[in-house]
Length: 173
Image (cartoon, rainbow, N blue to C red; front, side, top):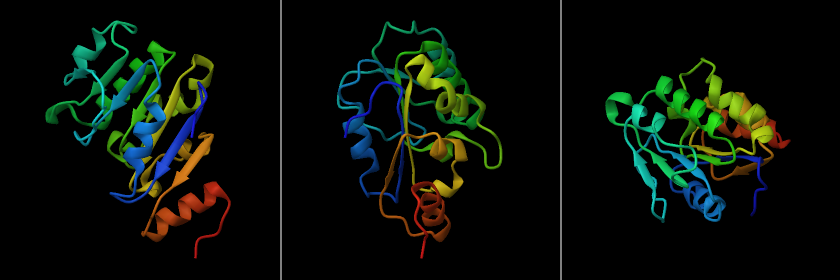
């Protein structure tokens, strides 16, 4: 599958079902990519600028490194700092944010402001967002409702199946 510039996608499914493989396929031909890797496990398959501290990302010129892998150190790996990463992506423009586990980038019940803005206004800035999660029921609704493409892999938790069903137009059984 191909995504046009500014289109958004959500990938939902259990561990090992192919979300990361599809994510890698969707971004492989993109010129400017920011990979948000809160699980510390994403393999980009090409040279990247590795960022481990938020203040290092803020020093990166938007076009100096086409591919940036943000893998924040444990003490910075929290939703507030991921929100700052999303804010930086909004300012960068003309790129793709690939987020391998959205639930780790937000606090339950709290609005992930800049991630939501990426989904809502990213198109106008030529920003694509491709986000994945093992638990779609725990992801802010905007990530699903604003996505132009939804991909569902195997899900077992009833609330996850129901959430994807609501977005994709089927009734969970």
